[in-house]
Image 1 (spheres, helix red, strand yellow):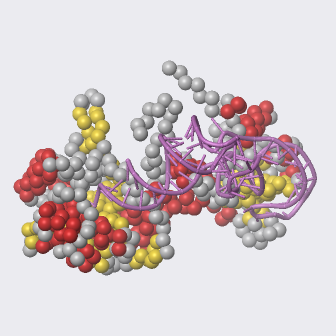
Image 2 (spheres, protein in one colour; image 1 turned 90 degrees about the horizontal axis):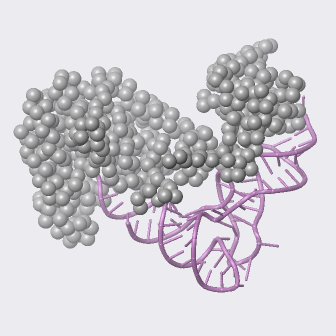
Image 3 (cartoon, protein in one colour; image 1 turned 45 degrees about the horizontal axis):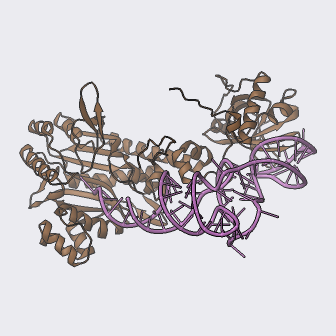
Length: 507
RNA sequence: GGGUCCCUAGCUCAAUGGCAGAGCAACGGCCUUUUAAGCCGUGGGUUCUGGGUUCGAGUCCCAGGGGGCUCACCA
């Protein structure tokens, strides 16, 4: 079956697109290659700007390239601004500086906003003090066939901004800046962990058994091996195998995939940082967490305090520490330790008018209390500590209380940021926890942890006491860049596919 | 999945149920120091799609598509 792509059929094009196609033909007719392989560029715009020397008789001559963002034609002289991603600079284009015909026939007739050009000439400062390039030669680099978004308002339509992020980026400089900041965040986290002796590793994304979190996975299939595989929901079990193997401290920054709802703080794929540190426990990890996040905040924003949605969030260590049980008691008046089974806790919640589905397992009820009463109010960075064992199948039991584990979660801005614990390294205990989870799965919990026999084998070879940690980078980026939705900090966030004519997409 | 709001020119946005408009962009002019340049003129619409109500629908009703918010879901 052949398809006809009449993307450039003049009948389908707007007047502006037709005009640009005509100019493209005009360039070719004039012997100008609209898409040459080489460029005359000698300097990035930021580098060219740095070459200007105040008061010198003669300024450096440079070639800079970039996208044409604005043009101001004033008869036989024009001003324009180009942007190459390192910065912008003004062009001073005068008829008398250019070769014959270039000003009237090429500059004024064949060049559009959005086109990429390279210009050559000396640096100069205009009457109004604007550093410019006095253009003596123009090279065409790439013809743009679509009109640019509004030069002042940019693109606001969120659907366009997320579906076709390149338009967002080319029109809205602050969006480019945001993603530079995002890169600076992961850079700072890597820097911190590298300096602390952690080894960066990469572990499988395609996993025969998923694990390390309570979440529904995406399933795929390896044709030749006739084997179903899961996209990882966490890195945890692989990173701990590396601790078994003898690395004292490892980390991975990468993508996790969870087949669950999409919201302002959930995307089906998201970026996670996990680290594991031998001979550490969850208290050590807590100190490291606040230290690491404060380090990143300082590196990226210049301060350990950030402003988020008009509120000040202070990441300076130490962060507040509250036992989970206490936090829930304070916020909801329920002491879950007094209601140690599904039914009694459910009934108590019902008595207080708290909505939950009948038959919800105890651990999930605790989570309902946490996410309803506690989490939204944790604006300042806070560690909730000492979680019920019931909801923590991979964490080590607390020595003083067999029903609790050495675990904490970090919150800020009303969102869960990270999750960490003293890792369970008793293989027989771990097996029993998996079996219990398996029981839950058989009774309808589709997020229960599957049994990973190979992982038990690994633990059986011996894993030292280990502290482990996981943090959502997207959410941290939201906090550091003052955004209130995860879509803003993911370059290509997940959106529903637009239905084609043949209606292939399911409703 | 439920509730709710939104979808108008390339972009940003207007339009009591009564001739579908503006700014930017485009096109034709004027203009050799502007920086959202300015001035004169011109063209540009499947008002998301399909039905319905009405003398008349961008506007009201129904169905569908996509998006936002929200609830549910999501340690």
